[in-house]
Structure formats: structure tokens, C-alpha cells
Image (cartoon, rainbow, N blue to C red; front, side):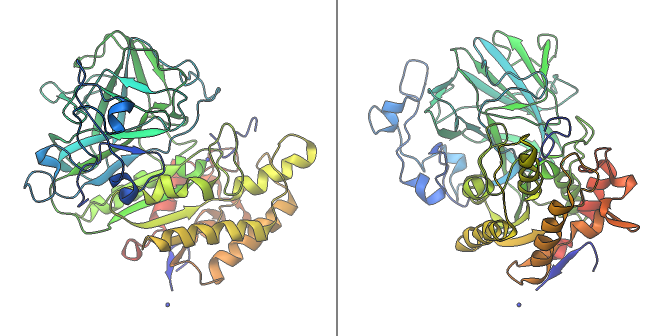
Length: 465
């Protein structure tokens, strides 16, 4: 089964130039799972504008407890059902670079409009906002969700105002995350939704996701209810504060969400912008083509490493795995593709072009084992993906290639994963297995092209997930 899952008993990775059936939990500190969040008190809508304050979350005021949402969001109400992930992006700390980037300056009296495509549909929707890396509380003056038309425009009649604990505005503490109340909005699998945030008070530097491979829009003033695009004169290729869109309604199997975890090869670096051609997008399309769509959530961060934190590319994989994978709703399977940046960047450090320390293969294996342990502790299946070829890439060395081969050998033969996805074989050139095949190479010998990302998704045995 070359290039497929074998069942058994990110930028650039580093830029080639530079290298639930549970009640609604409106607020949860970053890193708390469903059980931890249920113990947190989250208050809402008692101020003059319905704002949620940190003090109210401590149990003051006329708030409500975490785990109590609007009636339509509670299981058994007949309106909500099990919430499942439609779309996700892993939060990152504010950082420069990546073209037009608003994360370091933040926002004030501005509207941000962001377009995402959901992998599965439903009759209700809600969003998750993250202030994980904020140093001050984030005040959200208002938000809406709508069906996307074209660019920054949305379909008339589809705009839905969002509330947070019944209030139109909310405050997210530094380090926290917030889910909106659910709202009635029928959306199909693979349909694009537009989320609009109005940020009136100065936000300070913004938690964001650097490599969206999609266009976000900004306007001066409050334009959250606009259907047209005229006010949105500024654009960026990053997502800001938005970390998830969830849907409910219809039927979904228990634990049917698949999370793809990794670096820029998961994040979709080099794919066509605004076209949803990352490998998780292609995987979602394969599920939809069977007539049974599933949640496919992208937890890739470009430049991310398994064993080292980096200032521009997120917390190391072993640290962020719990928050970015296991805290997602209804997760049953995770595909892990991580480690090439640890190898390549540590080889660069020999020439003082990187601060990444030497990473031996045994350390990479230990990191992979930690992800397996964490996933299995939550009853989540782990599919280990072999690292893809990188001969000819800017940080390629023969010693690094030997590490990649050794790690791939362990992934294939150790028996520690619940399955193996041999992406190395799926993308490699038959004439030189250390190199990406030309049709699958975006041109930097590291990242796949659109065709390469489709080949990755095609290598997945859907029945094994």
C-alpha cells in the first residue's frame, strides 16, 4: 500500500529565502480541555453593553457559569446537537514578516473580515476567538457570520449577528479563548463563511495565524453588518483572533473529526491563495465526495518544530498539541507530520544561520512518542506520516537526510502509531527518492505544489481514519 495508510494490532517550513455533546463553554482559558473548561466560571452580558468582564468570570455580577449556553446550544434541545469543528487555525504570537501583517500593531476602531471554508456542514454555527498570546484583555465590540459571496462581500440575507453569553460584546482575558453562542445558519460541507469582528477599543498586538493562504480584509469603523465589500480597502494574508468555526445539526458520528498536525506542509505553504488547495482541504473534499463529509481541521503552523519553540513559528509541537489538537471538539484521529524543520534548522545552525540546537533522531522519536501518549490518553487515534523529501532545499544536508531516513524508518516500523501514512513515498521522485517529484514540487524542493497536496490527500486510506 505504497503512499497510503498502513493499518497495524510549515511560511515555509522555514522560508526558503530566510529561513459536544457537551453544553456550550463560552469561555475557556487557553489550554483547558472540555473538562477543565467546565470548571471555569464565565460570566456574560451584565454590563451596559453586554460585555463580559474578567471580574464577572471570577463569579461576580449577574453572569452565568461555563457550560450554560443559549437554549439552542444545549444537548437535547432539538436545536443544537453535537458541536463539531468545521474549520480551525492554530493561534500564534504576534510577529513581523509574512507580507502585510497587522499582528504587531493590532486594531482600534476597525472591522476585520475573514473568509474560511468549513469541511462539514450543519444548521447552526458558532465561532471561537483566541487571545492566547495577548498581554491585555481583548474587547470585542461585536461580531457577525455570513455566507461568503465574493472577496469581502457576503450574501444578502445571510448575515447573522453573533452573541457571547447573550451579549453583543465580550471581553476575552489575556491568554483566554471564547466561543460565541450558536446561531441558526444553514451551511453545506465545503462552503465558505465570512466572519466579521468589530474591534473598537485598542487591542494591542494580536494573536493571529500567520500563513492563511487566504485574504483577510480591514475597514475603518464598524462594518460588521455590511454585505458589500466597498469599505474593506486593506488586505492581509493572515487570520486574526479567529481560531475556529464550529457547526451543529445533522448527523455526525461520535469522534469523527480528523486533525492534521504539522508545519507549513500541513499549513499549505505554496498552495494557490484563496483556493483552498492545502492537503487537509483536499482530504475534506475526498470525504465530501463519498457523501459523508467529516470534520477535517488544520493544525499546521508554518516553520513549526516538534522539539523547539521559535519566536515566529509557534510553540514546539509537543507543547501545543494538547491545545491545538485534543481540545478540538469530537476529535477521533490525528495525522502527525512534524520534524523536518527540527532537522533542517539544526543543520543551518552549524553555519550560524539558525538558533535551533542540534536535534538527534532519538529526540525526534521521543517527541513523536509524547504526541502518541497525549493522544492515547484522550482515546484519539494517531497516524504517523513520514517526512517528505527535501533534497535541494535551502537547508538540505546529507547529514540531515540521514536523520530524515532514520526517523521515517522508525515511523514505518516501530508499531507505535495506530497507522502510517507514507507521504515520503507518495511525493518522492522514483528516480531519486530523496527528492520531491517535479510535478509535486512548488519550486523550492521542500514544499508541495497544488498537485503535490492533492497527492498527499490521495495517499490517505479514508477507512483507516
